[in-house]
Image 1 (tube, rainbow, N blue to C red):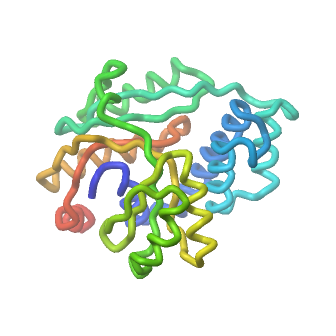
Image 2: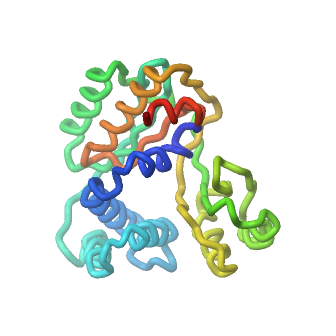
Length: 249
């Protein structure tokens, strides 16, 4: 299990979906609002907003809620001015972490993130200390039962760069701005898309060698994602599936 590419899978297996639904709604709505503010309210002309709109609908956020968020972003309705910040740090064992934040209070959020790291055995890092090894990419997951030939026919023409197995699923990698094109091409071909997002992946991986270390890393990831201002967390840990089974047990 490698870093952020499987973090969503870990959360799903831990059965946290229902508990976190309200928090997820709030984060997605905030992302929609910020996307509309930065690029306009037309989802056809604003690719970032289109991606956020699709994610929100996939999470069952009501359409009228999304539309109000877009109007707050464009100024048609009164809204909060959020600031985008990327914090960097380390979990126990030297695992590199990047924390994507949207906040209306930089001081409050910075203090909260620092406290999470320090209380759970990690540490904050200076800007650039971690980010150099991460780059943005589009990642699309589909069920493993789909044939590779069908995937290639549907995805490559839409901008997919690589198709590989990731556990029981197929993992498709593409440029960040091609995520929605790849998703649309797969769905048009009748292929179910499990998830599709623009994310951050690391050029180096830190292998987690023990159950205790794995639990320490996952505690940091969980605590960061519980923060209301945190939109996403990216990391470069590699937890083998066999070790993850022991963690779950």
